[in-house]
Image: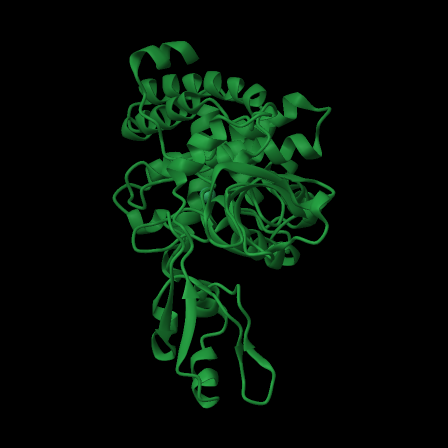
Length: 398
Ligand SMILES: [Fe+2]
């Protein structure tokens, strides 16, 4: 793709996509708008720039395009990298999503739903090993299509994956607890299946009058699992307590601080992060780096700070899949974050400093580079599309 530069009228500046190509300097010297800034970032953080430029008599800004990198291209490149960036077996995710769907559909039939729970437990027991070999969990989480269809099941599976990833960081020598947390993550919202015909009650925007009914899903979920023969106290408490808040304002028991069961605290963090990054009908999802910022802001009131710290250590300030504009003008996609270098991940560079696409993409370790840093996040390719399940692959995963 060729680099393209063109002049944009200042009044139209926030209506186009691209990067400022040349410094805009006022008549008496100071730089009003430096080159390298993306117009998307200006739109979000500095919308008053238009009136400032007009006040200084600036009529046009030279803009350059950023070559489009698609999520599909990123995935293709990801699979050919050496060393490999391991992803979770996509068919296992698909199986879990399908099985959860089957439980929801047959929620009134006790026998079928209990059989479904047992199948889910088998699938869940496969996940710890998969999660352990995955270096960047956000690349294995699945994107929903933004509609209601299957969204809850995808959300549950993503929450389970992230829960396991975090729990492993905090409790590396307690694998059975990690497994319980994963099961808790898978089943955390299963009680919502009983709240029929009220899609609004399943979204993140709960009306004040609906809160009590909504909160019931924690108790209904716990009861469903007990009925199905689940006796693991960590799984049950994760389901019951994933809406408790550190300051005691949560539900259903208004527990606070250390009195909240640990598995519930881990699922609470994973659930909140996943919700922020999920698209809902008519609502845009947050990019994962924005979700991390929100989680940090909510830590004091809502979460166990050790668990949020583990989330941060697991996926960094720029989670894998973040499309990053680097300080030297290059564009890359975050592959991995090292715990000691949350600001300096390993990046797959796709576009050079002159906005030309690099072929093949190159790996850059930002922390070794020293002078380069991430200027802003342009997009998020973190979650992957759900792959279709064929008979052979279903059989292959078990
Ligand atoms: Fe929930």
